[in-house]
Amino acid sequence: MQGLASASRGRPLNLFVRTLATVLALAICVSRPILAQTPQELGEQLFRQAFPGTNGRSCATCHVPENDFTLTPAHVESLWKSNPNDPLFNAIDADDPDARKLTFNHLRKGLVRVWITLPDNVDIIDYLGNVTTPRDRRLFVWRSVPSIRDSAMTAPFQLDGRVATLEEQAQHAITDHSQGGTISRADLEHLAAFERSIFSSDRARRAATTLSAGGSHETAAQVDEGLQLTSAEERGREVFKKVCAVCHGGGAMTTIVDRRIHDLSFSSLRPNGTVVYQIPATDPPTPVPSHQPTNEFINIGSAYEAFMAGLDPDSQSFTKSVSFPHYRYRFYTDGTRTKKVADLPPQPASFNPFSNKKDGDGNPITGPNIAMQLYSTDPGRAMITGSPYDFEAFDIPSLRGISRTAPYFHNNTAEKLEDVVELYSDHFMARFPPLSISDGPPEPDADGDAGPPEAPSAQQKKDLVAYLKRL
Image 1: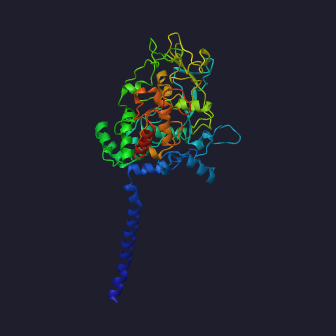
Image 2 (image 1 turned 30 degrees about the horizontal axis):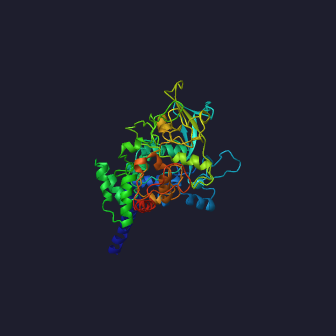
Image 3 (image 1 turned 90 degrees about the vertical axis):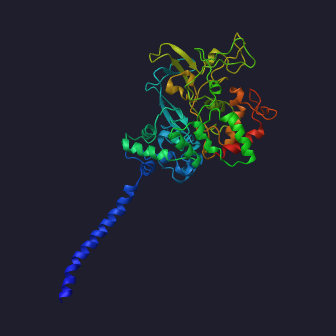
């Protein structure tokens, strides 16, 4: 009986101990994920969830993880069919936000509306040169959604470089695209930590590690030397080194290696916006460059391509079915907006943009794109710096993982990599004669475009695409 009594007295204690042990174990299990979460893991949760007070969009709404953190037309179409009430289909990105029935043709091309505040020294003008700047001094453009991959080594951010840090970029996105308020610094840092952890490949990660440790871009670029390439890809790499790497150099593939080539896209301008050419006139005419030793942006003509697509019914532009804004800009010396520097594009009334009329020195009369242009669809970097020399200039994107982020350019002009290479060959390289390499007779302009014959050759273009798909 005594033993039974002792055992009975011990049960409450044993039960208490077991209960306490169970509670502690549960507490450890519950708390362990929280304690173990890294800034990147916390950032991923914040990336995928909508913040309170927003329109329901999260970062992942537009930077879709399953699509290499971009917004693809295929994803938009699929989502529209399955759930047209998804937060992606918000009025702010409708073709006309004030329409009774909203349509999303731009969004279905992978484009979102971006609002930009004009610099103090810039006005919007009409075709006759009258100032038409809105009272809020803002304009909007249609732009693609860049991937967050490799963002650990590709600052500044946004296609015009208007944001210096990923933390700032995250806040801008929440404010402008999710219509939310200011979020905590801690949350911004977690979001940035997650974005910095996303890479297009192990090679990109190694390049970023080298750069963050103080290594040079040349050293970081060596991560690609071990790629096992086919003969076609090897030939493509040689084309890449001669044509692409002059601007897509270094470990991040965003470094301008040849400033001479870069400066060919920045011509000196007269106050009426026309290009200054060498005198006496040369054949072909030679624009006088405006050297930009610290400018890491470039105008390759992608915005001009959208302008041309709006005129040419036979254009192969991926976004030719949607409309883009028509803008002209007046640049002044300062914020008083009293002394004009240039009007861009040049005033159509000042010359016939469709003719081959030349000035008194025998040089053509053109704007910065070295061709006729009635309006601009996107000012690019110029609305950040207030400089007419940044007219339609954009950042130089990394080419790492490029095969997975179609369509291409800031306005999704090109649907496939093959289209990108064709555009460079057929249209853009005319502005950069030293890049017009060819291993055979140059291809004729079969589509009737003005300008020199195409280069590189057809085989070089195929080889280049094969190599680009390996990056």
